[in-house]
Length: 199
Image (cartoon, rainbow, N blue to C red; front, side, top):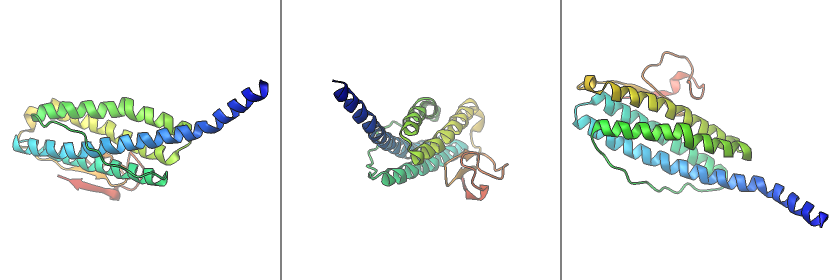
């Protein structure tokens, strides 16, 4: 009886990392799809903002779209390293008024910042999947900044009519900002020369 219990315990402990790694792979796939969908959605939101006369908000959506694409590519690379293959499934989304689109974007970014990525990070850390931890951390940091930028845009929307703006996106981690008043990226610590301008 004792030997059987001991054997079952040993087998369960040995299988735990494999189960966690599989879950991390599933999380990466979910994140890949989510970021890919967000990238497409934000481009559509950018077109709507431009049509409604908010060029700066259109630039923000384009910059965020670029960042989400970077996150998706980072996730896909880690999926491949773990022996999987990123399978693209875009979720359906609606394009409404610019104000409503900003509200939807804030809700999505807040969910990723506060719930999705923290849960994915916990699982990846427990599994010892360092590459997954890195890509999830990059994305979560950028999403937190996106949520702030979207909230600011929504708050000041009436005053943004006809105004233009340029945003800067880190090509490594997707961190998005309105100015380059730093030497190294706040999301991944690469030199600011890795940033591209989006307007």
